[in-house]
Amino acid sequence: MDDRRERSTRGILWVAWTPIRGRMSDLAGRFGGHTLVLHPMGRLRALLPIRYLLSSVGTVVVVVARRPAVVVVTNPPIAAALVTFVAGKLVGSRLVLDSHPGGFGLQDDPLGRWVQPLHRWLVRRVAAVLVTTRELSDLVDSWGGNGIVFHEAPPPSVARRPAEEGPSARPTVVFAGIFARDEPVEEATRAASLEPRVEMQVTGDVGRAPRQLVRHPPPNVRLVGFLPQERYVRLLAGADVALVLSTEELSVPRAALEASHLEVPLVVTDGPASRRYFPYAERVRNEAEEIAAAIRRWLAMHPEERASRVRRARLDAEERWRQQRGALAPLLTPSPGGRTRV
Image (spheres, rainbow, N blue to C red):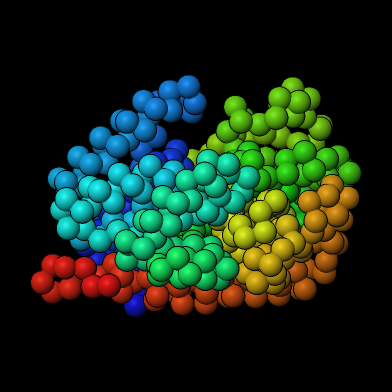
């Protein structure tokens, strides 16, 4: 199915209770439909019950008003999935869960672990569950659900410096993250101190960053904040090296996929998922010395070898996206009678 066929699909609602709208916006752009991205009250954790109440009301109102054939909802939080499931039942929508590792209680998410009985209950009652790895797909299947490994759509094309030109005079490393619990921020920024010739630009809401890093960052580390998607993609595309780290072995970070599609040299945490999905990256343990050494290897690499590796990474990511897109598309295609074909 080509992109024109995807964009012609209608009757899909993409729901997420998050401040980050990139994934749902990208998927709506590829498959059609509308996005509902809710995050009232900002990041004030003390107001979480109010935020969830407002998000619940907003979700029910939009689902009932639009009566979509298919609703795709991000989990976590499980509350978003439960509310959307109930609202979808009222209007006859089919539900697809987009369950990230945190939704399985991974990525150091204690609440996610606690709500697994609810997650298992939902999995058996939805059309499909999108997951990051075969291990999680097998787990969903063992619960009686339909697990589908599905990652990210390629980011928009942007101008980038050809890899054949070699690194900049002052190489830039983009540590792409959001200061999540599973991101080894201290080790990453310490790696910058071990390689002072680079400038490390760290993405993510500075309000969630470690206080010590905010007050006394290494001289070659710059906190750039939480960027709008367009600016973020341009920043990543212009990097000499993308650094994407996680303590969760089954995480397939969006930023690492974006770097692959953009032909940016990539350093990722070693693990079963990264070996499978990022075979052309430099893979490391989350230790400053290894991270710094991997950055040096990319910067010292012969331009032709570097260009070959990042090009193969892009082709690998594009082929995987074509396969995953083909697996998901039938679930999102309404039948001629208006019902969703699943």
